Length: 394
Image (cartoon, rainbow, N blue to C red; front, top):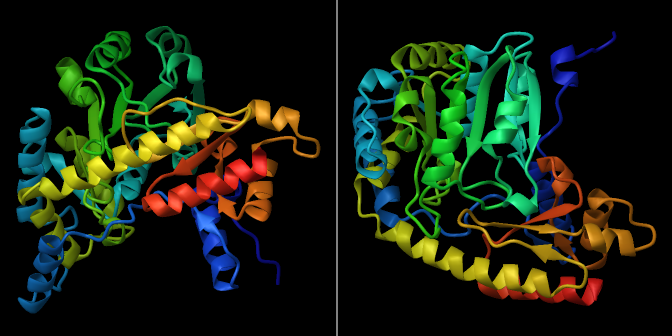
């Protein structure tokens, strides 16, 4: 018997970040001394009041199916969050709750993209954006934004990338992997370009909204560009800000017809997210936000240390970020100066073997020559990792 897979699956790659994390875990299980800085996962525990809400839900019997798109209580908490934090107004029929923001974005791609459609993706990008597009038979169009422009696309670049086949633009701010965040003025400038392209939808991935320390308040795309509200899908979740990665709750606010289509996709894949996770998310969004502020303060302290330590390495440069918990360092000069290492993938392999530090190659994010360093680890671990890198690279 010949076991074959679909052409659709053959077009995509496994997640590089998950692969690096799994490899680091496997090496640790074998007794190898490895520091894994590849995971996009907070090292903090989920706050107690959130865990208690889930426990209460289980004890109260909230263990059955819910509506596909989320419970009324969670939808109302999300509506209030959008109003409170972003000045955006949505109704329940404009909210979809999914098993993580990754599913939210996947639902969107399946709901709106057809063969031949183009998806505009600024690079560096989160690893899953291009492959989600390919799974919907669309064509990713990569817009490269290097360190010299702060890893953010310009209005001119956007205008040059748009075509009659453009259907979706995906923006991520603060960014995974760079930590770069668009200002309100920068978003307004991009919005002015998009006004003359009514076929293009905008998906804004705000997952790291509250892990943010920019010079001005965080601004979501629909907040900056209210005239494009009816074409914008605002995606967020509880995974990062509340240290709830394993709970798998993401959500979106969008025009009701888009939400209806996305929910239809979800109804034929996973159906509703876990009921107790939804109860926990209600407590997260409605509860005291001091836990988020405390975690963000720690992330900023780590950011400042790691960025400084990376810039102290020979032939390495790293721009500071405005949020998230990643440093994205340019190792191009380091690669060019070392015999036997031709690219960032080989450098990552070398650092794993020689220094016992697991990092994600920038090629996975559309930025060859870079490495992503997650500082979602305690300060002692980060200091030891930077010491090892310094000893290995000189």
